[in-house]
Image (cartoon, rainbow, N blue to C red):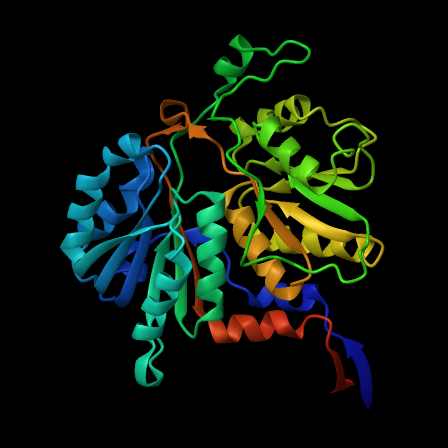
Length: 369
């Protein structure tokens, strides 16, 4: 007997790929990609996955592209030689793109168009280990528009700063902010790839992924509504990252403290390592807040959370993503070393897009007896 039902996000989440540890024999041995993407950054883990792959016989790709930043160029230069050497071992051609240039989006799109010739579905592996939130979300937008097969790989740092000892030794005074990882805010702007829309001029609300820099978050909040920084309420929903390692979970309370998040403020903890949980949480907030408010997102959380944000925007393009890049990164305070490496194999993105498009659709199905 036929019945009508609405496809919910919970119906498609089990069909999306999980994150798993990289197994070289399974994930790289005997594989050939069309394109390998990564970024040139100052962290040690910048070179970890490319070097690991270069030491694995049987993997190759036609070309590799690494993204460069305009911030901290001297710090980033430390890893250039090692990165280029590793990429050159498994790639026929190695080149770079300036990620902060006005031509970046167009240049990357042109690269994908060139690869997708004659109906070909290129295979792409993207190492997101040292991607900033701006770079990651911008590139994901472009990739999710393309007819490609995509895998994301990621290297965890061995030590993330600030450590518990550093926090204990630098307890902030009442109105003082300790600059652990970044300093200043260069500008605040809505992403051109995720501009959103608010045709009914609804009041603005924000989902703020809290970080160690209250300054950056406050700049985004002030950009949306300068009164919100002083009059907090339901229009600011705080997301505090929950590290997947037990030893790092002290960060939850500390991030809440430095962001001055009160018990009465809308706030929820969210795994830093599960993009599906990000999708589910954002969908819950969206249902609660629209059509009363227009939602904005400040994506200063983890890289895996940024993946969830980018995918959620594909489902709900009316939301706006707002960036607040710093004036400077403190390279020596970010992270040390590297350890576990991870992979999310999305396969054909056309199928992923089809799944996301189904959410909210009304279907008539035969009831199983």
